Length: 221
Image 1: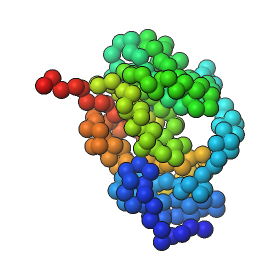
Image 2: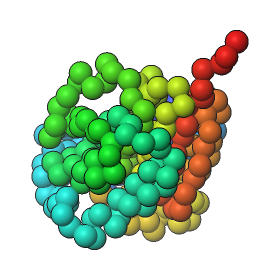
Image 3: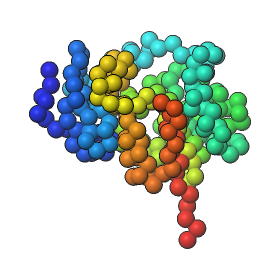
Image 4: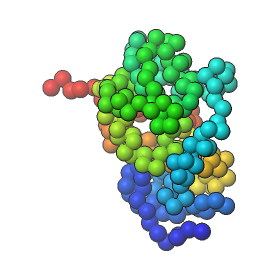
């Protein structure tokens, strides 16, 4: 299936990535520097196909199980936020449960989702925190999108990301997470460490799927 000799640029850090494996539907490359695994463009869905997959999801804001899932990011983030902050839930989907949960704790939360809550004006503002739960694995250009979000974050603000992490090639080969055709960028611990070093950010990895990055405060000099 794949051109196994071909090296491709990593869509996160730009270093060379090399063929990792094929499954029945597509091929996967892994970066030699940040260890992110990605699906090359030739196997990615069109926007229409991607939207059709998302429309099949049933995540309701009042579903206790879904709230418990989101609390894996919400609870550690809330513990680090000052009172009454303003934030952006990026890629919130049709039912913005996380935004509702954060509002219940006194925060103002705007929404932006390409398909369900388009609000490009939100990306021209500054926020105390930005969340993206189960979003970055869908990004064809993760570096560009994450850089844009980072620029929208105030000094001292938090970027909260939820996505399951690659652990090893062996585990990846049998990982159910890659079976979703909309999942095309799979971050590793090293991927987040590369981002933190690039941004000079404080990084906290919490559990198997939460990463919190804090933007440096402005220097007093």
